[in-house]
Amino acid sequence: ERHDAFDPIANDVFTRYPHHTVQVEAEMSVACQALYTSTRPIFMALHRLPKGGDMYLSLVTMLEHAMLTFLSRMKQRISDLCHSKAAFSLLEDQRGNPTPLSQFMERRNGFTLLQRIYSDEDDVDDTTGAVEPTTTRGVGGIHPLAPSESDTSPRKMGLNGKLSGADGRGAFEREVAQLDVLCRFKEPLQFERSTLCTDEEHMKAACLANSLLRVASLLDGQLRSRAGGWEKSSKIKAIRDLQSAIKTIRYHGLRVAKFCRMEMLMQTAKRMSEICASSVLQAEDAIRLPSCVNNLGEYLTASSDTLREAGGNAIAAYSFSSLEQYIPFYLMHAARIVAGGSKTVTMNGIESLDRTGSVLYRDLKGATSFENSFWDEEAAAHSFEESAVFINLMEISVTDLEGHYRSKPKQFSDEDYELMFAFTGPRRRGDARRFNLLKSKMKTLKNSSR
Image (cartoon, rainbow, N blue to C red; front, side):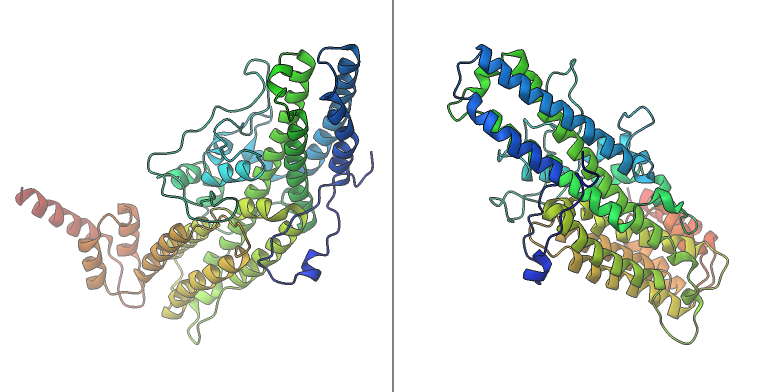
């Protein structure tokens, strides 16, 4: 009932251990600690009583009442914290149903890793995703997701060496397709201040996600008896209700975790979208970075520390997951806006875009260098290299541009190549007709060689 029952608890871990890579175990909120400490003795007594007896059912009823009280306060806290935010509206519709974006987020490998961290089992094939338990589907959530056949071998990390940041083929593209509002900007994104989280609100959401997932895991462990009586007890309706309540707590923890990740994507997109309006792209005297780039680097570093302090390494890792793909994607889109704009871009401006990628790679890798991060080195190298090549097309001569298209016609889309041919840069005058002519010649040569 306290006003700060679900708020982060002050932690001096960064004072005691100043190294950025330290493993941070954030404390659960007061409400979650109270639920666990007050119900643990009852769970322990439960396994020592004859199943189905009067005293057994009385204790189960007491536990169920505690769970229902906790759930009512928890749902109100989530509503107060998340429902008015733009990130939440992208994840759920007005009726509370998950959007296609939310469903695609659950198919990313980062979501599976998050579940594995908060699960007692090494294998999460039979664990549930972020779907609230219902009577039609029984206790649990989404159907188990089979790993993609194109998944790469996992890299050795912590947690028994089973964590990997690699996704199946096309997972990123499917997620991006649902994010037009963030990924197809034509000018700096504008959000009402109240619809974006403050740093304090983001910390509270991270703490809430970590607390709910941890307490659900702890309670589930208490419900499973050491003698293996969990399966037999599950036939009793009261026990099934307790299981369902624990699943519900876990479902809401995953729900808030997805909100934390979406908020990070929105904050990053908002800052990256300002690049296309920066005056440094027209600078003649020197090469300067857009101010929004430095702002984003500082935000990433500060958010890494605050999220880890409030929600632990796991929630921070999930919140930052796939940014090594999104930041180059945003940078390439900003380059498209600049190339298609009416303002003249100088060589210094193009060099500024190129350096932006290098600086943000360094800042992001530094912000995600903590233990058990979901950073995917292979995806990062591919994405940042692709964005660097795309920006380089803006400064080369038209002869070199034609040569690049001849050698790698599939590296970028026809729309991107046509945009580059139409772009008037420091070393060429734009002419989209040259691209159409070159494309026709290559098609004719290809047909004649068959």
